[in-house]
Length: 608
Image (cartoon, rainbow, N blue to C red):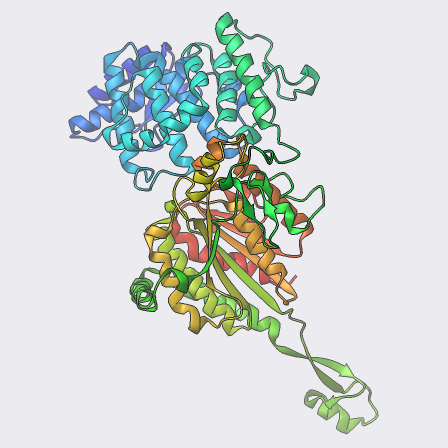
């Protein structure tokens, strides 16, 4: 069957796309698999028979976007410089797309309007504007919108201006020079990619880049493993000197301090004094988690600093809500139980059968002594002297086990994600308890947005350089391992309190949960983390070297996986946690959370 002839609008759109791409041989195909660019052809969605003006504008916008990318994008060069980390890759791709759009939208008003319509439609269909925008995805989206406006002249949609404003001061502090130089390199993809390296490092993604930029002077040429192109177009002298200077500044910032900075006794302010648990005085600057007694040079907390723990909190759920409030919130949670898909309950029963099967007794047959095997009775009667006619009952070995569920209580989990997380944690706690497996449910967040009392203490002390973690963390115990589920079931209702969910410091929370597990008497200890993003607390990130919280999380995970008896697993909601954890599962929708948690636990408990 021959394909249907294109409609007049599609024929005109195909010709306009070829003209904008500057390629008369470009194939423009209308089919259900579009819109996308594949080599020397562009695939677009077919237009409806009676399209609305908005639909026609979107069709033109998608075509213009792909045409500009075909005209100004070198896939091989892009792949050569593309970072290794998935978050840095996503931001690198988005900012390269902004460069391509700028080369047509800046001078062609019609193209600009078409691309603005596509951007508005993408934002409307995405979830990025529905959350608080305080995670890495929100930062990346804000930066992409800001750069499109600066380079391509595409205005920031009204509904996204709050998101961009939230991150504007962060960009002004960390990336002003790089953003200015990107505007000078839009026609040179190679120089633009090198400048993106500087930008990614300034924003805290330096650890996701395989190597420093080839132009960075801090490393000798022999140490660079990134393939270096044979031809680099010359850049302006001022821009080159600026790039070198910023590279030096970033390299200096990224060097960790071996010893914490401590002000002298003459200049130390009264607000800067805090006391340790044993009563000795301790400066908050450079307070390190390695004071727990670990002197191993590979310890994950050795180079991680905390300005002060004086305002940190470890609370029971009952400390944050009255019994009447917890009962009311639990009733709301029970009403929402019907939202939990039926497959989750079935999988929970399957997990219970897996656990029960490992706890059953079994028989050893063909023994010379024990209980007479009824199946061998006829043989015994015919030949009483036959050996191996007895059996003996034994119990299978099933280690005493404890499972800790560590739940991300950050602002981006509000709404349906935290609701289903609470329902699944509740179901798992009941299922595991019936099988004799101890369970513990913990949560982590911060006391306030943007630092809190720790930040105010730091400012009062003169704002010393590289203070480390600069916010007050809050850990919540929803269910302790020593408390039965029925006695703590109301506590899970506290997860529905939106005002408790703020920032997230994952590395410290993971270490805290790990240390609690290490103190448990059970033989087998399992820690499962449920999270929808990466560590993010703007105050800490803005005053420390790039990637400070992210690097600490990676170090903690690596130490636990390689040197701890605790078995670690993670489930990421809309977030690829496999880049962090070796035992990980990423789900695209929160509706998949229940099956993912249960299947991952069943995998851990499966007989080996």
